[in-house]
Amino acid sequence: MAFIVIYDANALYPNTLRDLLIRIAQQPHLVQAKWTNEILDEMLRALKRNRSDITEEKAAGLRELINESVRDCQVTGYRPLIDALELPDPADRHVLAAAISEIRQKCVPPGAPLAGSRSLRSEPWQCGMMTLPSARRRTTAPSRWRRAAGRRGTTNSRSR
Image 1 (cartoon, rainbow, N blue to C red):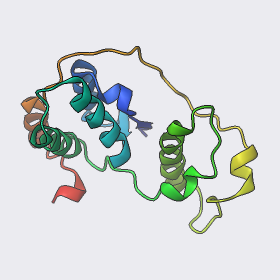
Image 2 (image 1 turned 90 degrees about the vertical axis):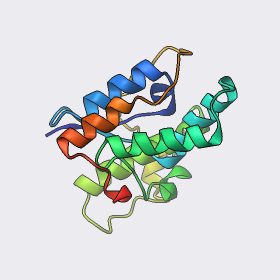
Image 3 (image 1 turned 60 degrees about the horizontal axis):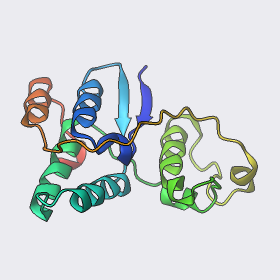
């Protein structure tokens, strides 16, 4: 069984790293890569802020390529958990909420109370996290993702 990995905006920002992570996610049984629209929004805002050549159209195209390149990549239903989480940086709560939501969908019986639960506030979450150095690199959307996804028949269920 593949590990569930939430790719954060800082991992998806650099083109080379984004390309590598998406290629890894396209390999069966290695990782099950996930992200949220909020994570993609954060990454695309940073790209547009730092790269004047990234227009709204290019950003929308990149979002589409990223989402289409990995099957079942979108995490939904995590928003009710955000307010129940306490982290040193409150801006990171959405990433942890997405991870908990994914784990809950796979491990916790339906209807189990999590959102707003006091245990979320006091429970220390044992989540692995890999931090990446800040890097500013070329950020074009590789067409090879689309070709690789097409060869494997891998598409995002939301896009079809």
